[in-house]
Length: 221
Image 1 (cartoon, rainbow, N blue to C red):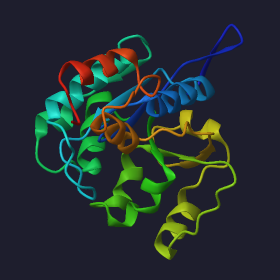
Image 2 (tube, rainbow, N blue to C red):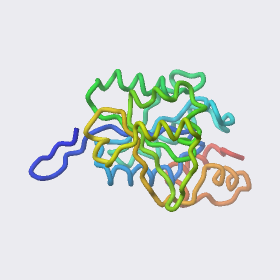
Image 3 (cartoon, rainbow, N blue to C red):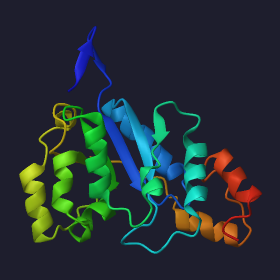
């Protein structure tokens, strides 16, 4: 729950953000730090998936993607990396990851999964997707002015669990959905891969250590 110390809100709750990160870029990181600034979570953990279930196989080896994420967050103490899906190998099912994290942090600490609207709209295709809310809150990031149409089962899901205020994400361990509007950077992993393949500059699209790693190992060529 949110705690006040000397009139100030003390950071609480753990946020997580999964993804292929092929490669991780400044759009991912900007979303992460903006979420931390707005919500005062105690930290945000990036969880690279080993093998996405609903996307094509990543271009790089898992260890390469994991190393780039570690390099990307090395300059911000609020950001960390969790390699559990890499260590587990096989298809990366979010429900298993959330269940494991909940078991580790205990029943009382708020756990918040950050995901984009595109991912949220695809939830009905995820394994045991309706169980996710048992383990964590869902913080859905959307673009300004975007009003998506929810399929009926997702609409009912939202009606049942939608929070009335963002404060609820830090007043309970799990069980709420909150939609937050951010203005995303117009950067994508596919854009970076395409530029690297054509031997064009990828500078300023991703952290310098990640750029150096890609260029050193001649990735995406």
